[in-house]
Image (cartoon, rainbow, N blue to C red; front, top):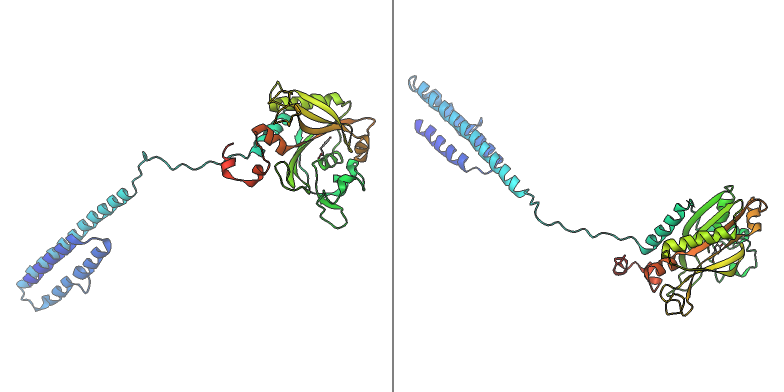
Length: 341
Ligand code: DAH
């Protein structure tokens, strides 16, 4: 029996030494010390021993058990330390390795141009407002002094949404003027950028969807001088203090008098070149004094109040600002183009 116990001890020590995982250790514990384990099996045979042998073997068995238990503990600790070490090694972070660069997005040139213009008008105390893109013909045309039968309302130019032509995709941001004036009493100073739609074929300078920015000022004693000063300030803020502005008579149904505003070509300074198509001037926007009929239609007394308005094409402005030669580039979303801004 003594020999059996010694064998168990030797076998257990060897096996425990080689165990590679906590699961293996547990299996060994069951194998040697468990209720059906090898040591228990030997102890069960104690009954057959003589009275002198029994305490001796009992003591030996206890010693073997204690030694195996100690070894189990020790092996457990060694394994734990090894696992921890392996974990630490596998999770090491080398903070000196260069990072992966995350490609940064760019602001679209249209937004860059828009933000510049917004800045100018917010600086002059204008509110930024918004209006619906699906608009009533009434707001887009009639109340802007553009009655039925006017060529601007033609089906070849306008996307009508309903068969009775009452609803359309707005062709200009000017209906926002009406929406503001019918809900707000003067003084009014508003600036409204947004998408507009016209039945135009796509080419280098046209798109069926483009952007405009509308401005409107209504107060007592507003004159053409205010219009000129305000727009000159905008042009100089955008194109530099040396920019030269020209006001040219024009016609719009909702303003009287009306004008178009040109800026002197910055390439040739008025001499005529490719950029200005030989004109010496580049057309920037339409503007005018708000027609008394338009004011009255919104419940604003034209005897007391007057105002000016203007409308700017944002694509044109961005194209000029960043020397973009083809409008299609603005909408194609080719990253090779967009990355340049
Ligand atoms: N809505 C006009 C257009 O699309 C531009 C315009 C002209 C707007 C004169 C105005 C204005 O507010 O006063 O051509």
